[in-house]
Amino acid sequence: MLRDVVMMGGAKQLKKTVATTMVASPMTVILGLMVMFVLRALVVQYTYNAVMPKIRSDTRVKPLTFTEALLFTLFVSFLFP
Image (cartoon, rainbow, N blue to C red; front, side, top):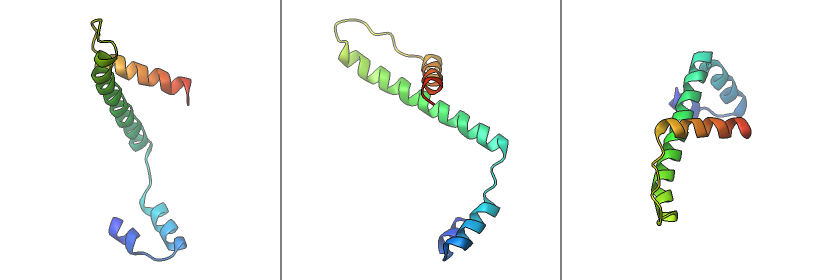
């Protein structure tokens, strides 16, 4: 399908082909959002655990768990839509 889209010429044909072949079901959208939140939580967890010990070198820093990172990303996404 990707090759067909890339090889097509003209915007009208491309728009029609993409509209007919890429139909997103609600389950796909929900699954995509869940994957995005998990990836965001992993990035937040990794960056916090990598940066905070360097910033606060004099005290012991509690590592951020995945659950805390996920809750933080959900909180931020609700605050700033």
